[in-house]
Amino acid sequence: MNLDRPFTTKTDWVYNRLRAEILDGALKPADRLRLTSLARRFETSEMPVREALRMLQRDGLVSFESHRGATVINLSLQRAAEIVAVRMHLEVLATAEAVPHHTPETLAELAAILERMDRQAEARQAQRFTEANRRFHTLLYQPGPNRTLTEEIQVLWDRVWRARARSIFALDPSRMQAAQTEHWAIFEAARAGDPEAAAVAMAAHRVKTLASWKRAVAAESGA
Image (cartoon, rainbow, N blue to C red; front, side, top):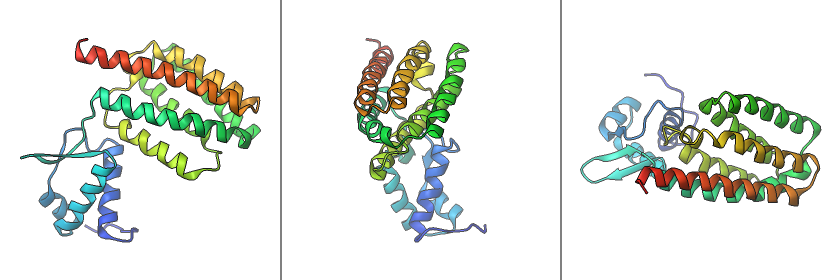
């Protein structure tokens, strides 16, 4: 097997390969990650694989269980809701910081995505809406100057993105239309160049989103 290794260490290389496979769905929730077979596959010793798996555990993408070893995490709704709560709290700040840096071009791109999401919500296309939703949120705060903030938000997106087989919009399809009303309010504040209004609108969006997650958690637990 002749694979390029553009990373500084074997551990980095294995980590990035496995992380990409988890996030693109090639490795599914609850899949086992066996040291011996992974070391053979990547033509390396078990040590870099073990270290890479620990790094993925730190990212919240892999868990270690007694008598089972490492597995791709199968995230509970409750845990996913907690991660979303933290992510959206950071997005309130990131959105406000990004507002002064938006341009007519970035605002036009946001409007085009929202128009597409309107059609997807009407057609109840939950998966397409979910993908566009992440794109909208990302572009909303992408112009912001704090790279650490935006990177941390993306890490939190990733922790839920592939670990849950169904999105909140698949669990609660009515949420798509409501979310669009909130998205347009955030967008209008950004277009007006008002960071405070954008933060308020994003905070309101967070409250409504978490309420939807709370209902999904209650339904899963039979409450």
